[in-house]
Length: 437
Image (cartoon, rainbow, N blue to C red; front, top):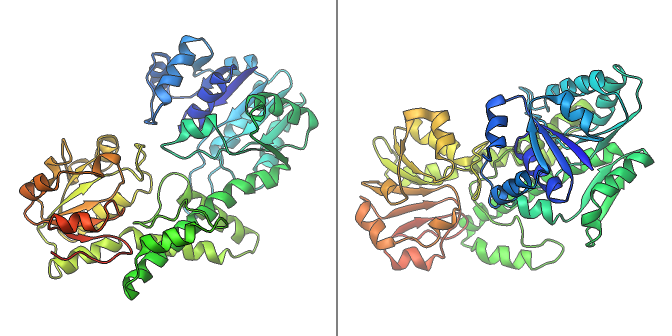
């Protein structure tokens, strides 16, 4: 089948590459000429494990194409996926201007039946809005479908090729049959495709992400309480997660959630509720707790240094909001950098993948180290902000030689408590006892 993907951001590029891998001819459209030219030459514009191999394979197999010409791609395809940004506005609501603009363009350009698929995360009722916009521009028949993505950054290729389910919101039998054909390679292997109405599909994505944000935040609250009463959050987490009604995933405490999805989707669902005179109290509390959780270790750093960190050099390992991505959107590292700088500290940061994105944002406000141990040179303390695998088994002896003080503030609970204790480090993590050396 011929398919067009409008937007080559994270979702669009992974979706387009996956659909090409399934045997379709896929035309990816983006207005950024430099980006499109780079992709034509095999340059993957985002960091995502295992994506480049699949990307290049499908370019070489002539199933994956890139263009800035929407009309050209539209004319070649029966199915048009909209994978456009829906950033939060000033009030937290999703900005649909990109989606509406492209819908307007499609309405003006289409010459035969198309299925328009909303792949972007959008508020309930967006399919109706897209339908209205296109219908105002053409009398040619078309259908609008909601097909939310459930990709985890860092595992997007795995998730795209082995999804837990495919959710499709479609009121048209013809559109349902077309979507079923696209995803037949998945359903043939037992992966369920769940058909529903468009509004339910749109809400499913927001509900899923918001629930996971609540789960993470609840575990962080439990972790903070563990420190008050002397319990160990690692033990509590194992005990809770062994209940199959709860499960082990998303129960790892830390310095809050970030990224492109959870913060944005929680805000958007809260705002959508307000518009319907409905108060998502649990989500409002989740936002409040997460904001505080992100910088919860800064007060601990101040406490260790007697109330002031003026002039102290803090090494920071990790800048991405999570491991295996270069995404720094809503990253906890940025909140901590801002607060530490405000309090007079110096920052020397290391992240092999996300550094360039932070440098574009912060410039020379912080130092950037070439390696994880270089960041520790004359550091008063180490702050771990991202759970990159390379940080899991460090050379503690070398760390001790590099640092002024053997002090670690770990926002991701990277080490069993006995490890820093055996190596003579003061070690403060989340929800566990503090190792004082």
